[in-house]
Image (cartoon, rainbow, N blue to C red; front, side, top):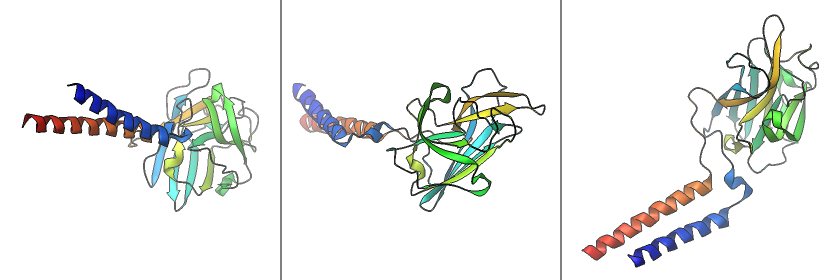
Length: 229
């Protein structure tokens, strides 16, 4: 029995050593899109003050287009991007925190209406974020002029590089949830998986550790069978 325990410990130790050697800041990242063509999200996780009626207040879609990713944020109904200081119009993270300032391009009607920002952090916006857009063409708060859509392209990345931030949020957006009378609840809301989307992919270290455990168990069982026979 002692030899089995020693053998099992040795295998686990080797697996742990491999994990340490491969560890990097990105190893703990939680990938939020494990599709190769596109991923969709609902803006429905309220982080602001007050209690707006539960609903999907907008959608986020990521689409792989060759070596680039197209991003579309569309608010629904009378909802608009807000400028309240609770966050930014749209915030996101990428694995490895690459410098993408020259690779992010506004598209369509969004050109000239948003400013790219980096390293934004605020509790009300769901924590710290590496990248974002602020609406430069919007009025203060939810006053006119109002915008309810944002489209842009990020060159040279893939969908698998989008990750949750350190607080576990996929995205954040400072919005006004408004009715037809112009009355709004303002604050940040997070994006969550839309219908039909799968769950996040485990980080590489977790997969490797699990594989090491299965391998060790299989080898121990094989050795025990040989001794019995």
